[in-house]
Image 1 (spheres, one colour):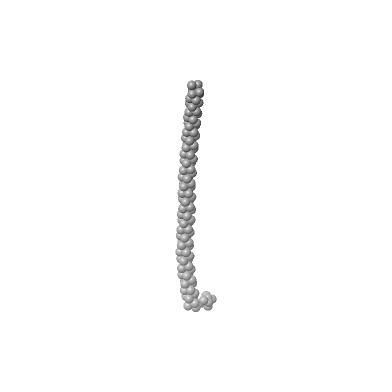
Image 2: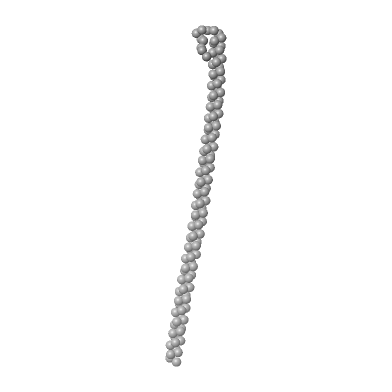
Length: 119
């Protein structure tokens, strides 16, 4: 009988130890699951930040492209205006040259020897 009581106490002690061990394992599993969830959340945050960074980089590249394009358009407009002014100046110089020829012709027709200018 005494032996049976000792065995029963031993089994109850073993069961308490097993239950305690199961609870500790359950707590560790829950703790690891929480850590895993936190890690997954951090990974997701990092991926979102990476996507935002990529989008920011693409936006910056687009802005640089647009700025260069605008600068090129402004330069083209300036060159076109310079060309237009140069063409007008050339036309003006041609008119002056034509008037100079007319003046020389008139002077030569008047017959003033001192005013004769070779053409």
